[in-house]
Image (cartoon, rainbow, N blue to C red):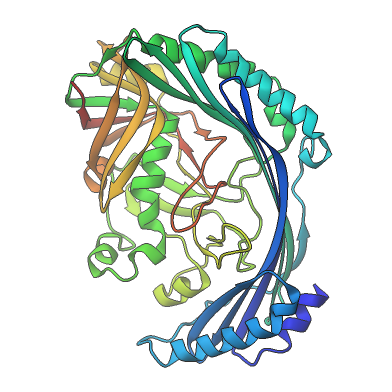
Length: 453
């Protein structure tokens, strides 16, 4: 911290902050029975941000001997930007904090040997390979430890550790020319113990991959559906959540009008929140990478837009409250607005009640990625079940759903009383954020377009 303070004392600007990170990443990868990678890398570096005369610039560097040059470049760039922008950058005011935060862990992975991590990964990888129909696995252990130090000219001083562990990957089955892929993953931000005794996850996913070889492909059409927490979370993150990030809509008058605070966007049974303060969840943190304390941020309340996610810059521009959602991938990047734990808040219906209300349709489970184009989306699901008269029926494969965000928000007509957040998340907006988490309860959605045979 003293080293960082000395760097900041050399800056003549309205505001500056500096973040130093030491990052250690451990990776173990199996492709089938073959161990293809094992090892750890430790890297570190700095990100300096300078706000001067309304211009904001950042510089990343990796050697302390480059600090003087980085200060000079950042100040020059900030001045250059200030002369070439229409609207000077302002930062919303935030409390000055002085804190050191280390999360509580159930078995710190730094105290676990690489041999034990290897054997745990080998064990889970071997489970699917016991099935003759499984022709390939790609299973990896990933551990990322970020030790972050933040200092600002306003006086904020924060040290926080982020520790993430996971084991997971793809399981591939084959019957003739038919291939099926299923993902299996366990992990989180609470320590290595979360990875122990999880054999049933890999066994269940292996059995699913085999069963899908005998499942029927979905028939294309428009269905009423139930989405499980994984699929509900994917929709919430990708289709809705990104439009709640202020930096993605600030330069679009059309989107700013559609995402206007107070606008009725969804059915009144639907409420969505982003809360990085939920301890034990993947997206948990105490301070963002601007030194702002994270806070629970309601986004949609009974269908009405009530909030959005901000950096200090966008909070000032929108004249809205800070949320503590400005996050960097690591020491190579200046922070941008990211989701923490975003989820649909649970309602009152049990799954059986949702199935009865559905009547005929599809019960769709477990996300398989997807894409968005503006307000339209297309998502894949790992599998589904047909539903007749409220009863779960046969297994169905090759599920893709598509729709429009605003129509779908109004077509969500019932919300379950359960709540599950993903253990393994991630987001690729500009930078990679492996700790971006999503989830929700089961939800009932009307008139969903399903692509298929």
